[in-house]
Image 1 (tube, rainbow, N blue to C red):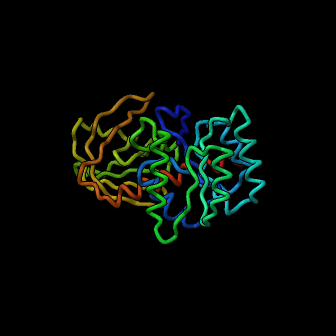
Image 2 (cartoon, rainbow, N blue to C red):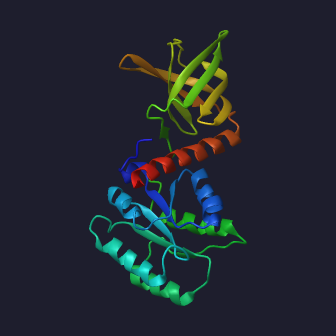
Image 3 (cartoon, helix red, strand yellow):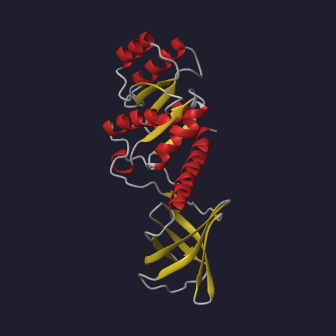
Length: 258
């Protein structure tokens, strides 16, 4: 997936640094399902390299893990003092109530994304709190949906039964609203053709849905077809598409870190 750096249009990247299992499994999941661009990372030294590439990012730090209090304070001061990362929006997360620590960090850093106590008994309360901060800093920008591009990944494929044939192709990009693809042979589909029983394979994930052909455009010697999913798409399919997009983005981030 091509990673854009126009945060006003594409939105800001949200990093959870040293996320707990609750943050990974519930809080990050809920943000992904709301079309936020979320990454999980467990290395506060390597992340600086990434943040310099994306200086409008948001970083939620789990201050209960990674390093001690003084080291976190020094790390954050260094991050905000560096002109390449000075625009980073910081938020702190903790599972332990500590008013003195909250006052210290909030006074020192004026945290745009707050100091949030993560509630194990009510994780949705934490999610709502984080949503509030993300809305305040316009984390999603003008983008409505995340879109993943295959970058020639032949493990993202499409198969459509059509006129007693099976149209086989490779997906170029996908979101919860639709996809674009290239077929092995041009099926000459007309605009508004309804394609039922469409099978989508996203690496190991197989999904069935239906879509309408929105149109096509030439791309060199190929023709790219664009499909929009119908309103009858199973909500579970949308959930799986969003989760797949996040996992693909996470994989590409890890390549940047290596």
